Image (cartoon, rainbow, N blue to C red; front, side, top):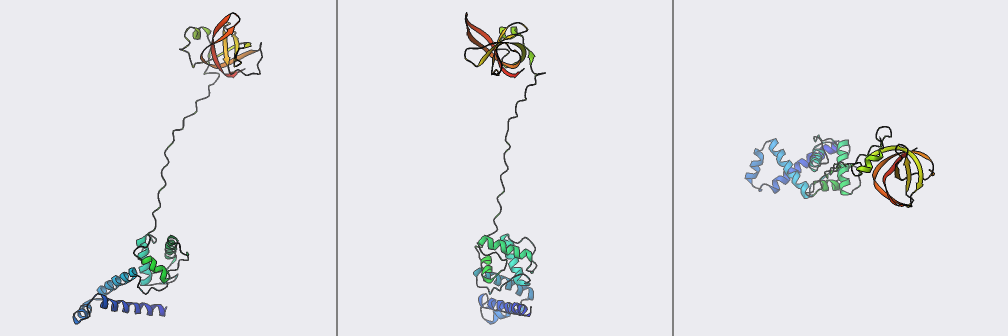
Length: 252
């Protein structure tokens, strides 16, 4: 501790001498001006000279590490705060916050991260082109996606009306997309193999059913829940026949 204190006093004396040589002409008037300055003015000048010497890389830096105290540490903390690495009030104590700040600077410079402010590290910190701590780029706020809601699954008990053959026969376009249920008997598979011919029990009307499960057989009694999708034709023995066409959605 005595060596550090003695070194600090030596640096103070050197700073004042350098001030006399660089700033003031060596004559009686300059000596008189310095003699007339109070302690606060002298310390302010000393701080300006020290700052300039640090920027020029000519300052007699001393190694600073955990446990160091004094003006050298305070100056280091002020500079690190200017660069964004130190976010506390400088107190002249080389503690963990200062160690972390030096490590962050060493990382930015690609140096070994040990948190020790050697003379070479301090020259880099006080250099005019020393890199400031990069400001993190905020992540863009993701735009909400308009995910389409799935269509509700039709319920057999409430979404299918009892089918009336006369409605779709008279006004087929009006009822397109409507859902109905009906009972009937499977009569045949139609000529293209994708439609089944069903005879409705209620009015004996003939209905073509698309997407009919293949496990059903001719002569089976079935109950169909489906969507009316228009009219279709099939070729009977007596000629073409127009039928209402349903897409099967449920089958029993």
